[in-house]
Length: 604
Ligand code: XMP
Image (tube, rainbow, N blue to C red; front, side, top):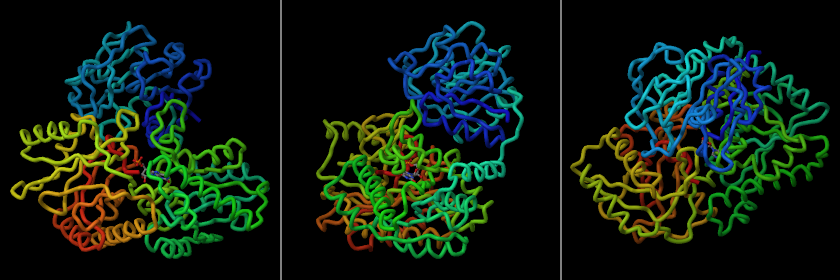
């Protein structure tokens, strides 16, 4: 099959590029950035991904310079453009202004990969370095206000470079650019999901051989589709599904899953309550990565114990997992990517099993949208396939833990600097919160503070303006990676961390809030247009009653690599907040106004 090589320099979007080319029906593979040119000869085109480093950094990912002389079309994206320039004798230096977010691209030529574009295009930037002199044969084709060499080309040799990211949906005509590139490569459009299923069924049979597959199932889209696919390949009797109730699942989750599986014809699934084990191991833990590791390890231990109790011979059983592409990249799964967080299906014990060839992950190549389509093709009903994604560690990543107030150094000056700016530009102010959440910026993980803004009564509530304020704050003030809107209570708030860990009581409070929210958005028919709706519990008391706060984090996304916060109809939001206010134990309600990047979807 005609194939495109995507060389991975560690960018968060490397796999997204591969996903996009496949959506354009050309098969693509992710390869190590250093793959020798000799091997790359087999491919119809080469795309160089972005990456978190600078080309001059010690140990920064490199590539074989000969690949530019193979006569195969090459497209360099972000770091990929910079490495192309660097290897061909041009120069890259640290940009004066770091650019994250939308930019206007002015094109001087509209041919090659830029054919049929507008003279001015909206593009998405995420970079610090920039090209300052071009190699021989390459010319500037497009610029933005902050980046003179935003698009470059050697049209004769079919070498192209773009500083922005055509693979993310925020770049309006990104798909057109990739489509043009594929056209130039001459690759045949042969890839589709029917073919994927056909190949995968064969691959599963081959990998499993005479063995059986044991799989932990969460009831989510990924594990359900993976289980069904495996069941279809080797039959019901040789698969054993186990739903572990970690105590960190949603309210009524078990009953809903049982019901749905019955409808989907998914069989041989067993249920087991292990909440007490999880809560015991999680006592006094508050760091996100530690929480994840403990949840992941406990999961595996529960699974091992069950296998022992069931007397399944480990030599005869493989472990099935519903791992999908973003899961592997965000763990630093590809060699050059920065570690953003540990995915629970990528903890040490699983890694060892993978090395021993004991794990089967049939959806490893796919993104969520593709998994959903595969699910439908396998006859899984819409109500499961369209379920919001729910992370493996469950409410564990939505229940923020902290032992004391955690402010940035020099916090009062910093807060007053932000407020002076906000007052002057927007006539509002806010507070830095004494805790941190995970975020992602320019391909790297951040662990920074949220800023809570307050609107006074006379200010019109306008999502567009709030979005602008949010981006402005996170771009301008590097201590901040999230911006929240205070919905309840109004007026001045006292805020104090109430030491909080992952306990049954806190999870039950979060379950209540989460259930209320889910029912509410289903009732008001918002469920489908919201991609995912984390409800996050913060150990933050806002009055003397000692309750906690809740963050509403509805987002829209296509594949979770980027996301926009959802703009809920204000009338409904007021109604929802009223319901939450009335929940005993909830002091405050905030709305997360942060896109991804710079925030992640989950808070951790
Ligand atoms: P972030 O928070 O990084 O999340 O923007 C991206 C997507 O991944 C989901 N997620 C997980 N899914 N196991 C999963 O199966 C996990 O450990 C995990 N952590 C995050 C998250 O809900 C979002 O859809």
